Length: 140
Image (cartoon, rainbow, N blue to C red; front, side, top):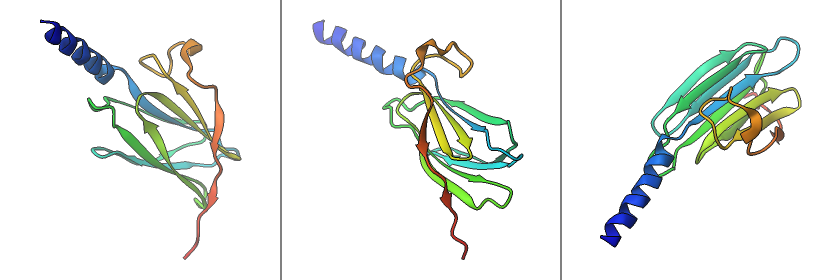
């Protein structure tokens, strides 16, 4: 009976982690009316390519796999000629990951709890901070 109780407790923890919210949000905060081009992918999904207009955003909520191994990789390019780019891991493990594309780089804010990006900001895991610089795309 003791083993069954332990098993049910562990199973409950796994299922709770599986149903908790996960998502990415990509915001275009570039200057001079530049368009942001994004494409993201995981093992099972492809998001985009999608053009995000200046001041706009793209949000995607999803369920993490039961083992917590969900990963999304993203590529962002800034217009009008999309010469600046960055490839990065946009989601790993859990929570809500908010990315902001700005002139000087790409910024990240993660929420550890909550069901949407619009929930209260009390539960922010980290404040907004610069994560990546833009890379100049090589012309062939």
